[in-house]
Image (cartoon, rainbow, N blue to C red):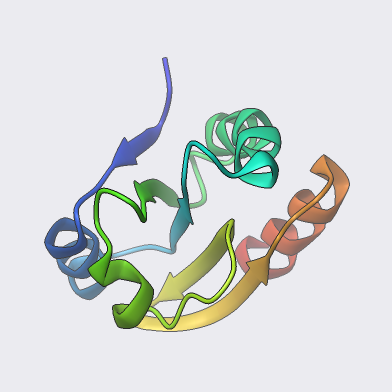
Length: 108
């Protein structure tokens, strides 16, 4: 079972504003090779770190307004939010180690 919720723009914004703990949000697309490559380890870390944060994801093709709302230029883009504010962002993640280090930095 995955701990990653597929979200619309409205749902993501609501979760960011209402979150009582860190929220990690990944934006990508099914045609994006890097997104497809990163998805399994994003899901893995979402399960491993479920006690530290909530995790969500969205398809920028299905929710094109995400790009403007979160100033996304390249995908995958993964962001960490705390208290309604973005505190970290990683773009075009390539390896599990790179993502793990990013998450550990921002989630403790």
